[in-house]
Image (cartoon, rainbow, N blue to C red; front, side):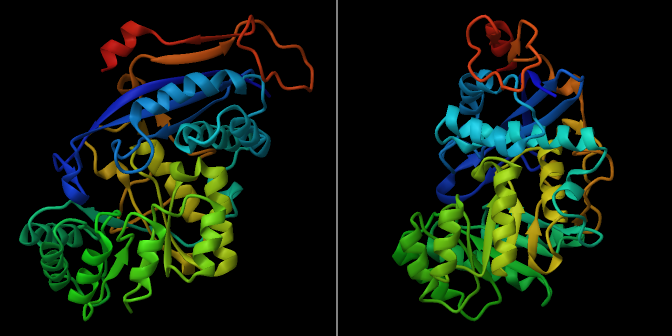
Length: 400
């Protein structure tokens, strides 16, 4: 089996709440998502999705996904999408860094592997643990009383885990955390997620101001060293996220006892293959995990569900259902929230079918022009004569 075409759609994802606001006033009202399709010479098509959280959260941005695909895609034509180790090595050899660009391709190839074997991705990743995956709800940054009202509303919808977006004025953040905790039940979990928004002295002020509450502190400062300092000066349970973007950093943080929980985002690591490696390492270390991504819709939610559902329940802190945050659905068959949980599907692959009327026109593609010989040697450099890279300016302008 060989990859014969890679193509991309641009899909806008407006938000149910209107805006999503996190640290220092950063916000997004419409997310820009890229849905990637990988097509094979046997007629199978797999789909993946990459949706950065704006351009100031991680070193990633929406147009960068599509620019990276133009650079990377032609190098992957002719490879077997089922050989995920080989494929990931080729992606790293062809494009240094930029893991978020590679993520949707890798997810699409897992989708193909599942369809080729007739198995759900979660079975291929180790099997299904438990009946469902517990979800958290992110609470967009607002005034303290409004955030508390939203926590109560989503608790009534079945959520028992809440990620409070803080990382602003430390005194106001202390009020936010107190107000949110006051409306929760004792067995609900509250996470105060600063998304790197506090300076070190501000973070210390906050953890001292909430030291008597049942709350987790997530990624308080920009650098690993600053966050580690806060960790060493509080007894509150601690989560690391943005700084943990590789196996090397995961091992370093575990050695330093920098966290009680780690947040694994699929596109931060470069796809399901590498995030599964991090997941498996966490299982070996006995480290609890939040398994999710930066953003997305139904395809991303399906990928999260399969990775999370194939992880031991005892180490699964929480995940999220991004498709419930948006007003647009880009695929059918995706997991849907039920009483604060979701389940990976039983159909082969990711178990989703893209809504072509939502995806719209292809905004970029690369494909093999001429028939590849039946050689076992992958075609890795086919910019000339063997491949065409197409970006339709009219389609791009229309999509924007």
